[in-house]
Length: 287
Image 1 (cartoon, helix red, strand yellow):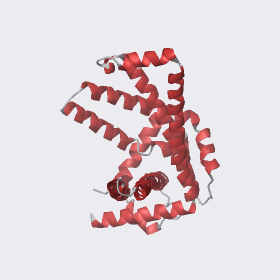
Image 2 (spheres, rainbow, N blue to C red; image 1 turned 135 degrees about the horizontal axis):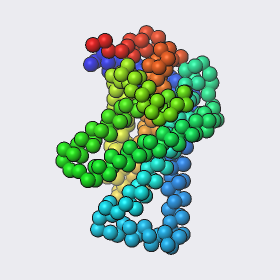
Image 3 (cartoon, one colour; image 1 turned 30 degrees about the horizontal axis):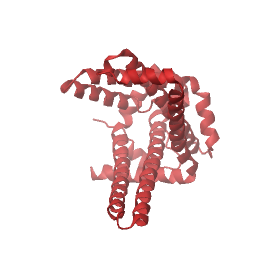
Image 4 (cartoon, one colour; image 1 turned 60 degrees about the horizontal axis):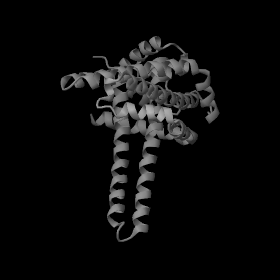
């Protein structure tokens, strides 16, 4: 386990080195968040400025059990589809840039965006598939209790594992959702152990930054009454650390996924990664 964790740290450092070569990759999670907030804001403005629509939604949510109304679930599906489409579009752009770098190129933000635009039909279909699966799981979860909800949670986790490489496959090969899932499952069988360890390492990094941010935020809140300027400054620093941590870990996770994909599917050692490290870390389990 210690050896795996050491490799996870080394992989994280390798991903960081790639990020330092192309810092513009950090822009994609930011653009994704801005796009999502813009859509939410636009939708809220449309609802607020349309009395009939506002009254319709108020009547829907004022029901005793709105989740028993099919219109509620239709609204949930639309929201999920838009959310997944935006995330997948910018994630695909980020993965494209990582793969260009691994192939020896020097990617730009426009390279990533152009790649996502070229794969727009596949991204739309995949967003529809993922939204549908997530939507059905939410409906099941709302209807079940106890072990039933646990089973639904396991189904969701299994789907996430099975589709781990789906977006990189869509980006590179432009295949349909069925082929993407099949190829993703095959790749997962080769590399999932190390992918899990690597993402646990990145998750630990995110946890550390979150704890630091929380401690600074608590300190700011505790001194705010005596020193509002210092308290506000500390809270601001905490928020910045939290956001930067999420931004960096999200980007590093995409770079790691791209590296795993290249080795799992193409059998090639990604450029800027140590050859021995990759071969040792991504060696398929022989048991």
